[in-house]
Amino acid sequence: MYRNGVLPSGEPITALVAGDVPIVGTQFSCESCHGRSGMGAAEGDYVVPSVAAQFLFAESPQPARPAYDKDSLAKLLREGVTPSGRVLSPQLMPRYQLADADVDTLLAYLETLSPGDSPGVNDSTIRFAVIVTDEPDTAERDAVVAVVRRFAEDINRQTRNDGERWDRGYTPESKLPTVFREWAIDEWVLSGAPSTWRGQKARASPRCTSASCHRSNPGSMKSSRASGKS
Image 1 (cartoon, rainbow, N blue to C red):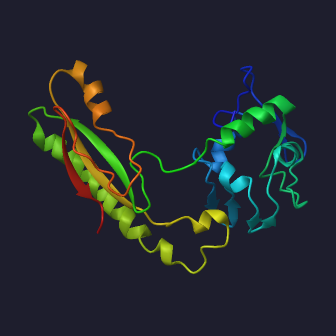
Image 2: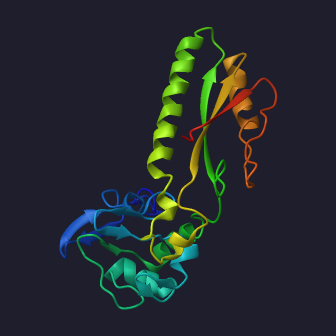
């Protein structure tokens, strides 16, 4: 439902926008605005709030509202009214036609969003793996990795001061450990027969939960670290 706008029955969710314009959920899924992580987004003057359960079911100071519960979430989805009584724009927030069981299903999914760090992510770093093979054409391989590393450098240079912005806001999301996380690139080199590559990748991708996220890759997987920090 959240990601694709489709009910458990397989039928698309139905909704109205702009008051009376019928749409289906595949046109306006939750993910399309709130993101796959549920952490929301901002575009121009519009701020899309987080809907991850840890934030949605807690009080918010900006804009001020009580914590959501199942009933208030249902009212928001169907009528566009928040727990504080604020009516959301019908152009931005569709009025979804959902049964109680559908709300329960969506609520259960929201509780799985962003409960903690994803693999390769900690408070300071987001790690990306560039997966290549040990085939003889090393020049082509190195060129691909160099492009990714340069992209990470550009991202870090453009966003490294985000955590020092004076206007970060007062929402629960803005109080997360840091806004800026350095992008770091790991090069994973697959070797041997292609039939062994899946196993090599599985051994090389531990679920990292600490600041020491990078681990040596076992077996025939080789690794090199490349920080995108400028």
